[in-house]
Amino acid sequence: MNNGRICYRLVIHTRDEFIKLVSAIDDMAEKRSIAPSVVFKITLALDELISNIFDYAFEDTQEPEVDVVVCIDRGVFYAKIIDSGIAFDISKIQEPEFDKPIGERKKPVGGMGVHLVRKLMDSFTYYRYNGKNYVLICTKIDPETH
Amino acid sequence: MALTTIELPNCTVLAMSNRLDGSHTKELETKVEELIGGGSSRILFDFEELDYINSAGLRVLVMAYQQLQPNGGKVAVCCARDYIQEVFEISGYDQLFGMYTTRDDAVSDF
Image 1 (tube, rainbow over the protein chains, first blue to last red):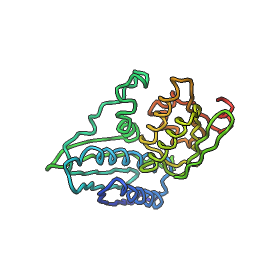
Image 2: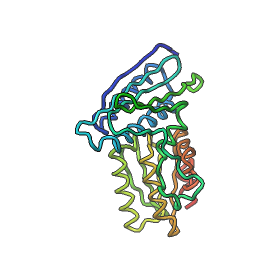
Image 3: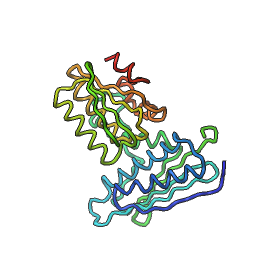
Image 4: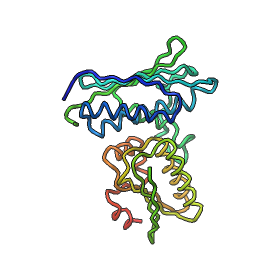
């Protein structure tokens, strides 16, 4: 496996532009021979986080903008997602009510996207700095899974 | 995403390919509502050719389950890739739907 660092930075203005990030991830995966299952979990985590931003962060914003940096370095994938929308700690979203049957949950599918991020990534961190939301995720890419 | 509907004697198969995300989720939701509105009560989602699904896509399956299950209907999934199967397990939705490795197994169990 080539262990050299590879990074992409993209600025996304609409939810539909997420496809540009998908292309960047696919390109990184091809250059580092990453297994489809790993590409899937990375893409899914980014999809859930960025979808959430476009759903909730930009109610008062005329020009939504999400700045995304994705990197693979020495067998680790990490991403930094920055938006200037409403302050919101996504890492604190409640877990789905797994103890209740689906019909009795207040939100049958609420919190599932963030639950997937927690399970698929090794770390998931939020902080607010200079009026912007920062989300960091990272996961080890096990060479055994290639 | 390409969406194909196959009417079988005992269920309706919805086969989809490529990616189930973004605008495709709405397309699937519309199709499922159309099927349920038209009287379909047993729906099999065939993921043989599906490479990607997110929580919005899963939500459509849950919506179908919530409408059909109380009235004796059924929702099942077949042929999911291993990593998509894992998402069903992480979400707990594998406990809601019948999960099958082949379409034949799923159809014969309806």
